[in-house]
Image 1: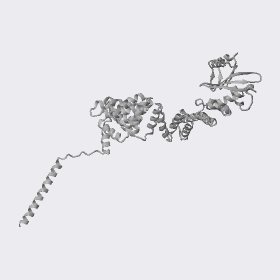
Image 2 (image 1 turned 60 degrees about the horizontal axis):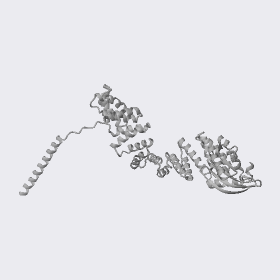
Image 3 (image 1 turned 180 degrees about the horizontal axis):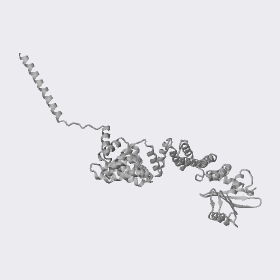
Image 4 (image 1 turned 90 degrees about the horizontal axis):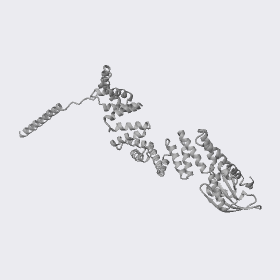
Length: 455
């Protein structure tokens, strides 16, 4: 009996609890707010189209269509909507004028309406002067228009809001670089590369800034790293070669220029400069025949590039005269050795004793005692390697040294010419002048055993 009563009590209790929970659930359902259903794309278009068919300048219809096209990145249609909305904004409080101006600017950029974009962003900036996207876009547009000094303050303002924005850092660095503010550019470019290590354009710009700031060793490492890049490789190789050439590492410079020229689709101006620098470096390395080949290729590709025609004429002559190559291009020891040979062979049948050799920046002097069957005397030889003009002052100095040495004669040889004043000064004085043409005759004959004085 007691067991039956207990079972019934349990059943009644459970039923009561279930009834109570059911009641509470229904009560909560009544209190819970109904969720608004998001309109689908088709509904938005239908409702907006209906509004706009009745009034093409309906703010609500235009806002709906503009927002839809903006989010879908249909930029032409977004631009058309916001172009009307921005004009309606002053007379309709529900229209967000700043958002319209911002979105109009972005749509204008995307559709290459640059002047319209600038107007829209400036209007937006009047409403929110410190907004990141507004300042960034104005800076970016100025950068594209190559107005780098104007881009810098806009980009700087944008970075006050988003200090780690990689695009703002990138174009701030680029703008400072293009404005030749190389040291300032470095910090921004470094931050941009830290955030985006595969940005090779920023890396190249950083190397250029290092190069222009005098940090050529650091710049060289980057340029060498970028030499294989299809886009940046040719110009990187050009810089690498220029750095190596400036430190007289001609072999490395030649390799750099050759790597640059191996690339495909090289911009013509870069290709021309690579060929020119390669030829000049080969000349410094005394590889005249190969330099001529490169110069002639350059002349075919770009007739009259820099002084290419005159280099071809000059070095064709050098290529045919080994002694002239030595006279103009060889190291000092080889040059002096050639000059000694000229002095020893200069006077036929003479005994020659060289008593002094002096090397100066512009010329080298050799003092020799000459003893011939007919006369004996001290003769001063002066050798000019320059192919320029020898002026009167240099000859006056030469004449003064002849007097100091109590020499009987001075022989002056130059790879260039003598000015009219210097020739007039030599008249009536113990000075014998050998210009480029007479020097070439001597250089062509110095190894033949022919007495040079008779020439």
